Each structure stands twice: as C-alpha cells, then as structure tokens.
Length: 157
Length: 157
DNA sequence: TTTCCATTCATACTTTAGGGTGATTTTATC
DNA sequence: GATAAAATCACCCTAAAGTATGAATGGAAA
Image (cartoon, rainbow over all chains, first blue to last red; front, top):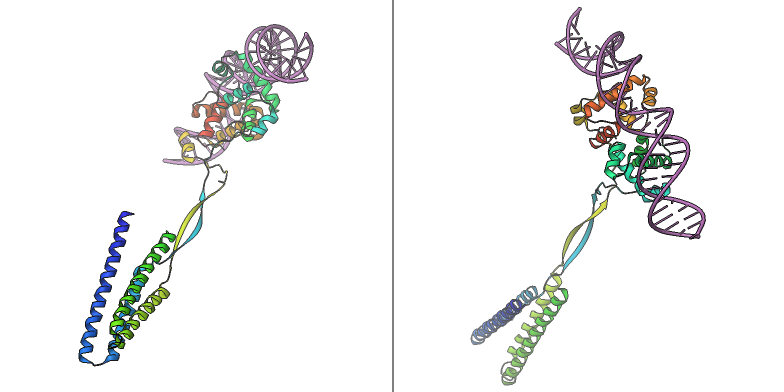
C-alpha cells in the first residue's frame, strides 16, 4: 500500500514534469514563431498533434484495461474408493444378533468352530449353537452357503 | 480491485482537471495582461486543451478489454463397473488344474461335495481328491480357508 | 412379577468333510 | 513307444460340522 502510494506519487510527479516540459517547449516554439512571424497554421497544427498524442498517452497510462474472467467447468471423472458398506437394512431384516454376526465373520475368515470358540472365549458348543441359529436366519444348510449369501447381501465384507 | 481501479482513475482525472483549471487560470491571468496584444495565444491555448481531450477520448475508445478464460475442473463421480478380473499370474503360480478351479468355484458357491459331484458328473471320491489337491496347492486346511484365500488372490470372483 | 430374548453350556447323534493309500484311464509331450 | 501329469475311482478311518434336545442366567420391556 505504502509502496503503491509512493509509486502513484512518482507517476504524478512525472506527469507534472512532462507537462511542464511541454509547456516550456510550447512557449519556446511560440516565441520562435512570434519572432519570425511565419507559417502560423503549421505551428497550430503541430500544437494540435502534440497535444492529441499527449492525450492518448495519458489515457493509455492512466486507464487500466478491464480483465473479464470467464469460468469454464470441465468434468473430470473420479473413481470412488472401493470400500465395503454394511447393508444395515438387510442386517436388520435378518435379525442377526451381534454374536451371530461375529461368528459369521470368523467363519468367512476361514476359522474352524474350535478356533472361533477360542477367539471368542466361549465353548465349542456355544459356537455350534450360534452357527445353527445363523443358518436358520439365513435359510442355508452349511457355512459355505452362509458366507456366500452374506457377501452377496453385503452383511460381511 | 475494480472499485479501486475506478477510484484511482477518478483521482487522476480530478488531478488532471485541477491542473487544467490551474492552467486555464494561469492562461486567463496571462490573457488579462496579454489579451489586448496576444489574441493568438489564447486561441492556441484552447486548441491545446481541446486536442488533449480528443486524445484521451480516442485512447479510451480504442482500448479493448482483455478476456481471460479460467478452466475449473469439477470432479464427477464415476461408478466403477463391478467386474471380476482373474489374476492369471497368481493362478499360474499356484498351478491349479482346471478341474481343481472348477471345484473351488462350486465350493465358494456353497455346494456340498456330493452336489459338486453331481454338477460335474463325477463321483464323490473324485471331488474329494480334487479338493485335497486344491488345499495342498493353496496351503490351507479347510474349504473356508481356500475360499477366503482364493478371493483375496482374485482367483475366483 | 412375568415374559421374552440373547447368551452360554451340555449331551447324544448324524452327516459331511478331510486325510491316507492305492489303482486305472486319459491326455499331452518328447 | 515311453513318460509324466491330470482325471477318475475306490476304500478305510478320523475329524469336524451340523442337528436335536434341554437347561441356566441375566437384562430389558410390559
């Protein structure tokens, strides 16, 4: 801002000096022609041209051209991240308990019933009970069917 | 920015006008002393002013505003085609036979060994043999592990 | 207080899966 | 023709999965 103010002042000073110079030149030419008393029309013509040029110069210097901005939107295809999204409505519809869902996921991970029991800190019998209930709710006969169906329904990832 | 430009132009115009006014006053005072003897100088002074204004007007008329185009990229979500792409190098590395791969896929679909046998027109023993070989090559202990691993490796969809 | 549901556990039994061993046939390559 | 691999099949045995029945406990809702 301060720098801009100094620059502007400098511009105005230059403007003033150039104008003073031109006036001096004009006066000097005026005196020369007045003394000689020749080609008065030429003198006037030159004055006209000189001051026209001065006007143009001033206008170009002072007037800042407007910049018109045109915004063009370009569609860019974006592939969304491939993430698993739990199908909550389907899960609610099936009515699986949280324990049943846990067992299902561990089945899909390839664990045996005994291993699942160890993972969940329960007995093998408990796991079998949950599995049985799970198959009932999913209307399947075996774990491979349960896993296949659950993935199709987006209940497990 | 635009407002600032207008304000600056206005300032310069005012500056110019005030200077012109001063010049006019100067000329007028000068004329008061010279009017009797120098009618010509008054005429020339007016010519100078008029042509300066003409120059300014011309410059402003000729100046054309610049047009700048800005391209803005807009993200558009693209639904990826949910297609399975067989991981052929991995399949080659594991060395699964075509029959073994068939059995694997039907396992993943939830079929029992007996059902797979019926689907492929072979005996239950044959299916068990293929399954056994399959587990060996995949280094797994049970079908759920085989399925899980095969999906991870993109051998089956 | 009663009822319902989830969770846990047990037992007995049946079915299926999985491992081991061996054999025969078919297919492809040299 | 010889060889190796894939495919097919059988039999025996064990392990694991799956079914049926029953019981106990705790928490939430009516």
